[in-house]
Length: 114
Length: 114
Image (cartoon, rainbow over all chains, first blue to last red):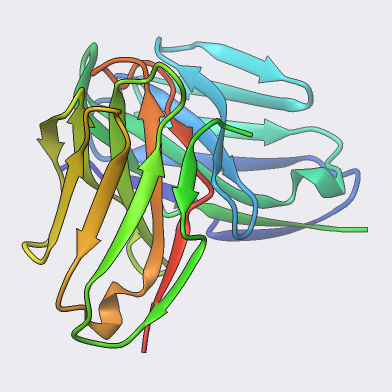
């Protein structure tokens, strides 16, 4: 079965600094989703990447998909306290979506130090 | 607010007991997904329903069952509870069977089995 490994598991960053979170899949990536979870709350959709080389941005968060490496990275520029939380990557198990639910990584816990 | 409602928010019970978790999907969404989140396993897909019918099964134990009602709300039943069942249970909804569409997550039910 497909596994997603996220690194690092946790990250403490000083406010204003840049950071990168990685998500590596054990199998071909057909669709890669990034979600953010605030402690004790549900997951909020950030971005979805589908094609190799695709890059998307939302405010100060940029995500890229490297299809050959079966990897995605999430980059936050000039981090703010509001960026703190758990970042999870999720992937489709099949090409063209499929109905089998998303597989998720275990998440990266991000703490922003003022 | 994702539009997905989960009740109760917290549940404390004893081993051997049975509990029911409830989920109301976003208005118009036909698919409901159940996920279990724990520290060691991360976010695990349990089961998906589409318009009242079971569509896909993940790592769901035989002690667990779910259903989706004609009004599209869903219930997850957990029986013969064990300490290891303590986790955060999420419900998510989407508009179709394919997970290419982003999932909308509820805020979860925190289950504590004592």
